[in-house]
Length: 122
Image (tube, rainbow, N blue to C red; front, side, top):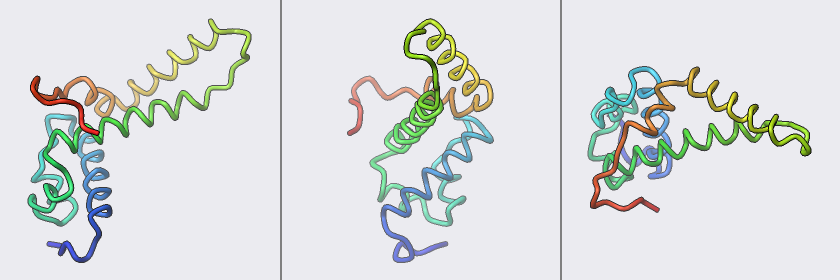
C-alpha cells in the first residue's frame, strides 16, 4: 500500500478517477467498486474517501469527464456555418460514434442515479 505522504490529495484524486475510468471502460458501471479503485491505485478505501465525499461524488466527477470527452469530440467538428442541418447530422454522428465505441463510459451517464434527497455536487 502506498502512503498518503507519497502523493498529494490532488494526485490521489486524479489516480482514483483514472482507475475508476479504466474499471468502467473494462467492466461497466456494475464493476465500479471503491475497493477495486483502491486496489488499483495501491491505497486504502479510507484514502479514497479522504479526497471524495462519497462514491456518488467520485462517480459524478467521472461522469463529468465522460461528458467533457463527448464535448471535445464534438468541438472538433468543422462544418460550414451556413449549413446547420449538416452540422446537426454530423454532431449526431459523432455522438453515436462515441456511444458505440465507448459504450461502458457512455452508459455510466445514464446508469448512475443520485439519491432523490441529494443535490448535485459543486
